[in-house]
Image 1: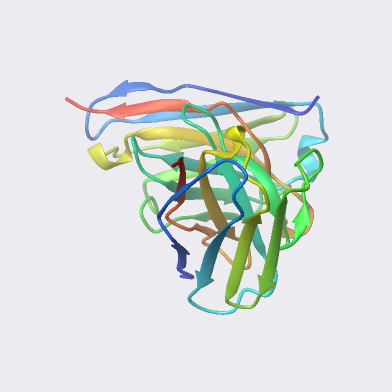
Image 2: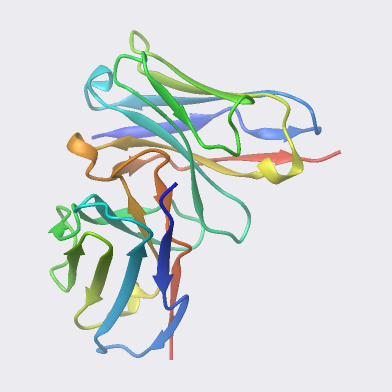
Length: 107
Length: 119
């Protein structure tokens, strides 16, 4: 099975900050990586697919990059509604797996 | 509007069974791979099961293999998850999710249904 490791697990930042979350795969997954945002009590919401394509309706301050085994999610200027938990997911092969999550908190 | 609505969750004793349903609307259900994902209280996301558009191919996580069965009824636009031999560690919110074309993520997700396994 492909393991995904996100770093950091917790991140404290302020409104307006630029933040980056990293997701590393235990083996190459080409660009079959998605990023999700989840707020408490809600279902996850797709932000980025195929590593770098912004889902329709997602603000342009979100961006993704990477291929193979290392990927990043960047938020260019944090807004209050961005404080949430973020997950990466690999869809290269079954079983699909998720990273353990990164909780982004307000400093 | 694309919508997914889960039902069937509840309280069940260890060793018991439960069948979850996910009613789909707003898209051609029979054309898409569908999945179940769960989230234990306070924990992260865990992919559980996936099924091809025709229903002919299924996949399950090792943690549920042999106990859970994913299926679908394309004539009724409904996805199912039959859960047998339930354990306390199966306690979670269960989400159904539509897989986008060419393995490009899950969107949308249903609102989730809570399964609690406890005596």
